[in-house]
Image: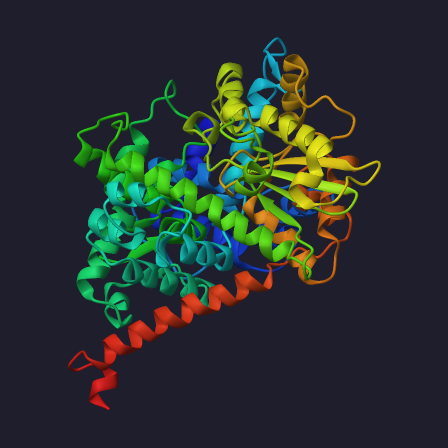
Length: 562
């Protein structure tokens, strides 16, 4: 054990530039390497002195995580305040000191809490909140699925599922709105982020001199706009972190690092904090914040969006786009076979079950015919709220988050859908229900939506039992599944697995665990589907082609000189 006072003495031995570089390198390896996490952590822990290295290896061999990304990010914030000035070095000097400080933070955060606190989902509420924050920040941001979804959400334009009135009210296509909000062309912004990821992945570079950006084949004005949006000076970042008092400090609060994951150093160079954050900054959820914040200012709003304004329309378009992308994914997983249709949309069910001039029935977004299993799915494009992301949510806030995921009485919609399938299936499909049919209700969320774990599962069941909803033995327990998890199902289907049976087995045998953990335990291969690989290659090829054309037209560049 190293107490906080002793830890501050440890940080005092390490120049701030060196501490930030070492922590960023650990994050880089955990985010980008294909090796198991335990192997990566053991390699870093081997730098500890003497007996400490042996104890660390033994702990890792016993299944303990010693260097989860979330812990390294907490250390990053602490190093900003506690380390003396000084640049990074191109070596591993002071690594043993940094590791000792990191493990000290883990000991402090892991200390036992008051046993009388309220419980949520069977766990102490603080533990349940921190578990959700852990799942959120310890997840790896993989470039291929992020780029593929960026293609659908931003580069291809609004889909046919987005209503014309909402498009007009929002004020443009996604890429146009991004350029309006940031002043930077979308593909130029994505291109700079891609270069930084390539340098980290191929060469392990995280520290870049100013001249690096002049060789990218991207307009210097766009590069400056990218850095304005994604970087912060070391002095400003240190000041932001130092302003957090012990009373206001939230150890899992990393939004500032997510919005600006690049640090500008005094010598003019820049340091990437976490490569995954750079990818998310360009290809993930964060660009939605850029546009939404910009449109809110135009609407005249402050803390709340303006009803009927452009921001509201933009978010509505994003929700429709999210539902469209799920529908396309489901069509790939469950394609029609000849005249045998498997996937039915909300509109299909309304058409089949709405009587003349009658009210539309309450149904979910999609149902899938898998023989003696029907999968019922509903989309909810909701990201985690800040109290939950920061691991500071109390019981009311956790319940509020859960209620938002179950928004619009989704459980009742599922129950109504199951009832209609049971009683009126021939009107939808022309076929009768197979005896003993099981129903699998699932809510689909973004990857940065509510994580699924035993506490969330238990609390969902408690809420549904209290409401008397979805209590039929014909249905498995209601679950939440992310887009990433659906991608794993798509890969399994690409390789001949029965996707319906896979989902039904998960919900029947281990409903409390996330799908990817269930699949891992079953020996399933966890790989990206072919569509993601193809779309990722398409995006990269198009960005490279744009940069090549730019260099060919810039006087004095290597291309024009030759």
